[in-house]
Image (tube, rainbow over all chains, first blue to last red; front, top):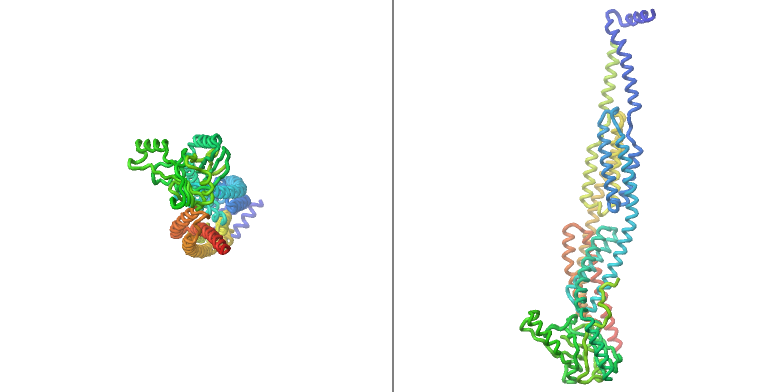
Length: 388
Length: 205
């Protein structure tokens, strides 16, 4: 009864002949209301992106970047950045969908992963930066020490231009590494210090091969020295030992060491004398053949040795025969212990030069026939370039 | 009837204005900021002003996040003003950082050029000192080694020039400083050896 009355009232409102419109409105208003409710529901309950997580990730990645994680925790950092890029792309894709069709779950899980990776990257970067800095500082100190050791060691050996030049280059690289370290460029510091180390390895190898080859005869030299001292003791006379490596002239009397004079040698003293003109000081057991003084010598006073002895001659002939020396090579001679030394450099053509005062003493203590033994070294073991 | 038409028309205008009136993402500004940052990187801002460059990267990232944050909203409620401000900041600062980098590079280059002049002067001085240096007890071998070191230092100067020409001014600066330090240390050593000898000579006279 009530519905009928209402219909009549609506029909009256719309006017006559509008029954169709009345029916349309009767269905469309509730339908619009329903659609409105659904839209409102969607508006209220649609999925939201995990903003808090995203912002946390962003801050964490920034912190990792600030801690130089790209340098010190590269793996973690790059993984975090890769996930971040993936997350932003995914987010963009979701934003392009209809809002009721968006799904931010994957973004949330990517955020969790980014956060973990960035935290790890920052922590590792901070730790690595400290330890790397310490390690690099240690390496700088070690290289500095190594340069000094090699410099000291090579200073006692015949000057070799190539070695001196390599050593100098490595020192420049070392100084460059220090500069890079000062301005905080750890990568460049490491690069330069490694280059310096490589050059130093080459220098060390050259020096070692020079000295190790040289020290092969050490047992023989020790035996010669022992025999010479024993001869001095038994014959109660003076005997002379020249230690080339130590650059000393040792004078024994009655088997006792009584003098130790600094000596200068041939320019190319490291190694045995091979032939005339090689500026090497020979190694062997000799004796004084002649004593010269005044106008007889240019070098204040001189004790001429009986070089070459029989062994030298045999070695020379064998070297020529086997082709190690040219057939035109000559064995040389006139090896002396003379004065005019103390020049601070190995400068002779193979002789042994002493200070004039020392030469006076030696001259007085010796006679023709006094044994003079020249040895490469009397050390117990071959020296190492850099001691451990 | 007129009333119904009016309601529908009003709804249509409202819906249209909502759609047309939505803010649009500042894609052009994003591209501009990215290009400015790339330019700063090409200028080596990441090498000369690493921290500033990182900060710029962070602000670009923040802007991108802000844009997506707004994109997640309904089109009628999007506001890109914060993103635009961040992008404008990034673009402007990237440009000024590129300029600052160029100025710093010019400074470093000028310093390297000056250092090369200083090295050449120091090498000439070293050669003069070598001629005057005592050759006696003080060690002729040491002098030989110094001569070799000076030659090595002199031969390094073209390497510095190569680095400068390739635009790697920082490495050039490191090398120039190292070479200069090496040559001056040799000069100091020579000077002190010469001074010792002249001191002795004065005493004996």
